[in-house]
Amino acid sequence: SDVMVERFIPGDEHRLLVVDGKVVAAARGEVVGITGNGRSTVAELIDSQLNSDPRRGYEEEYPLEIIDVGTNVAVQLELKRQDLDGHSVPAAGRQVVVQRNGNVAVDCTDEVHPEVAYIAGLAARVVGLDIAGIDMVAQNIARPLHEQGGAIVEVNAGPGLLMHLKPAVGAPRPVGQAIVEHLFPAEEQDGEAGRIPVVGVAGTRDSATIARLVAWLLHLSGRHTGVACRDGLFLDRRRVEAADSAHWEAAHRLLMNKTVRAVVIENDARTILRDGLAYDRCQVGVVTDMDGMEALAAFDVHTQEQMTRVLRTQVDVVLPSGAAVLHAAIAQVVELAPLCDGSVVLYAQDAGLAAIAEHRARDNGRAVFLKNGRVVLATGNAEHALGALGDLTFGRNAVVPDTDALLAAVATAWALDIAPDLIGAGIKTFEPELHAQETLRT
Image 1 (cartoon, rainbow, N blue to C red):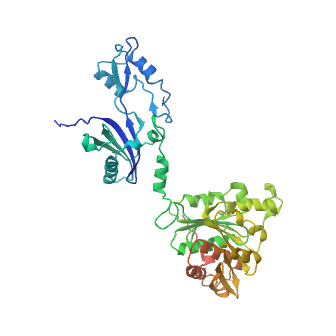
Image 2 (cartoon, rainbow, N blue to C red):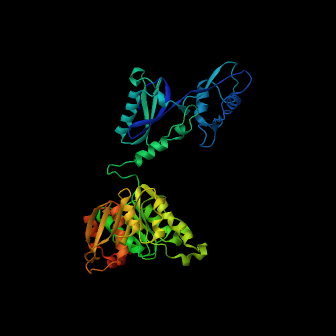
Image 3 (tube, helix red, strand yellow):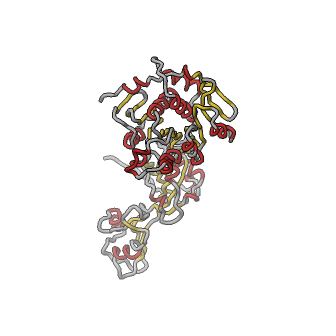
C-alpha cells in the first residue's frame, strides 16, 4: 500500500499576502480553546466563551466565524482526540482545544522578519503568481524560518483579504490599494497613468468629424482606438454600428472593450442632461460651441447661463495631467477655462483674438490658429507652422474640411502629445467617406 510520510512543524499558522514579490500584510492564527467549569457542556462553553465574542459572526464582515459543534466536523474530530464531544462536561479548570487552525485573524505585519518576507516573495515567484497568499507555520514570525524549523505549507492563488482588512486583533492593512496599484501602476513605463486616453467632444459644430479625425490620428500613433459619435460606433477605421452612437450606452460599450487603447466620445448637451458622461475623468475635453439650447426645453434649459452649466461638465472632468480644448472665438466657451484642472489649449481662425493673446502671454499658454494662410501651433511666443490650410485636405479626394473643425482636431491631437508631423500626415490620409461607410457586418 502507499505510504505518506509527514513532518510535524511546531508553531502557529500564519498567512502572508504577497503582491508583486513583496509582503503587504501578515496575519497569525491562534489555537482556540475553552476552560471547563465542571457544570457546562462543551457546546455551552463554546457559546458562552467563544461565540459571545462580538468579532464572531456568520457574515463575511466578521473576522472570526461562529463555531457550531453540531456541524463543524473539524471541531468534532478535535474534541474526539480529547475523548470529548459537544455534550461532555469538562472538569473545572480543564483546558479544551476547540480549533487548532482556521483562526488567522491577528495582524502581525510589523513583526515579519525580512528573511521571512523574502522567502514568501520567492515562493510566490517560483509558483508564478504576482498575487498570492503564503501559508506558513512558525513559532515566531519575527525570526528566520530556518532558526525555528518553520516551513511554508501552502501557496494560494486566490487569497482572501478579509483577515487583513478586518483583523480580530491589530490594525487593518490597505491590501486593496496595494493590489490596485500593482495592477494599475501610477506611472507605467511609457509615462501614462493607469487609464487609457479618453477624449470627450461636446458641442454641435462638426463634433462628429472632430471625433473621427482625432481617432484617426490616435490610430496612426499606434493605438487601437474606438469612437462613439453621431456617425456610428467605430473601432479604428471599421464602423461596427451605423446608428447614431453619441450616447451613453455606445460610449460604455467602448470603455468595456478590453482591446481598445484609446477612446473618443461625442457628447451633446441632450446626452449629458439625459444620461451624464460615460466616464469619470478624461485626458482631453473639447467644447466647440454653446449652440442647441432651443432643443433643451424639456430639460428646463432656457438661458445661455444654463447652457454653460451643462457643457461645463465636459471641462470639469479633465484630469490634472490633461487639457481642455476650447473655441476661442466664443466668449462663453472661453469662460470655461478656469474650471479645468489641467491645461488649456485655445483654437480659432483669428490669431489676433484677445483671448488667444492673453492666453499665450500667461504661463506660455498653447493655441492653434491661422496665420498668413497657415495652421500654426503656438506655445507662448514660440510658433510652429503645421502647413498651409489649402494643403490640409482630407484623403485622396482632397475634401476641404470645415476650418474650425480642423483646428479643433489639430489642437486636440496636439494636447494628446501627437507629433505635429504625424498630425499633418494624418489629416491628408483621413478618408471621411470611407471611414464612415465601412461597416462591419456580423
